[in-house]
Length: 384
Image (tube, rainbow, N blue to C red; front, side, top):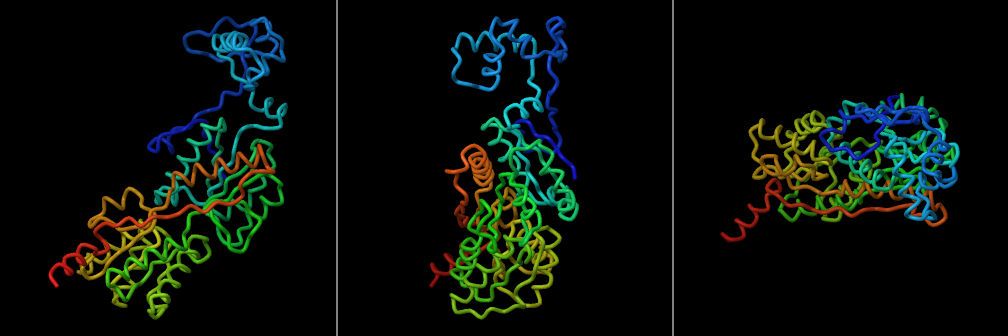
């Protein structure tokens, strides 16, 4: 398992390449004021107290942000801290306060998978930004699911983190069981239909999928296929359920031959589309934008026109959606809001467990662009 510390809000471009080291050494009493290279020296709270003319307890309250300190005293202590480049020892501070102000973010996917799906960089960026705003840092664990599950106890019992966010959750995931047994506060990104105890944040995947099929139906499509996500993953399960129910509600026959499972990747969407072409769909709901754009490419390479022959709707509304040719109609999920909400929920669980919100489902939105054929429908209605 690889742990990457993120101690401030990072730009999306720099996220995977910039790693900030935590300064956990303290400064030295006998050392002169910092040189131009800002070398960190060793100091104790007693040293800061002596140099500022305050008591040790007052210095401690200033460092910990206690409001019960006069502004004049606070500025005097901060002046000494700034001049000597003092940084509190995070480990000692955690032992003293019972909190480290570090949150764990577990993404049980390989680094390659995260790079290939724009959803995760956006989510992680939002988590990092919101954590920084709430005066928390993020410790990110990236690993394949199998390795993650074998080493999860290293995350839970190292005393370094106050709580955990777990993303990309599979149905009946053993990671959730381990988290529940640890008594560490945690929030899942993803609603597990078989678990009513776990705190979670999710988007309305079910109704988002229904909206995609509804729109294709309104565009006159009657042989609507889907490129589904993995059936053992929560979003795959919910979006397929929404697709099935929408098909039946419109009086269409549910045809298993029009359902091909993908893995949310470009290759998965492309291969799934090749399997569907011989089934002659006139509309495809791809359960991720990455797969939808791959579907457009596969259809065009097979000599079919989008949307004239096959209309496409995706899910996510990542940047790629508006740049594809034709531009992709999709179901927008609020990725940035999801990241911010999961951080706020977890911190509330840590700081106010009795009153914290324990579940939240965020709405989705249909974003209409060229790939669904709406312009074709408008042109047809004008000529009739």
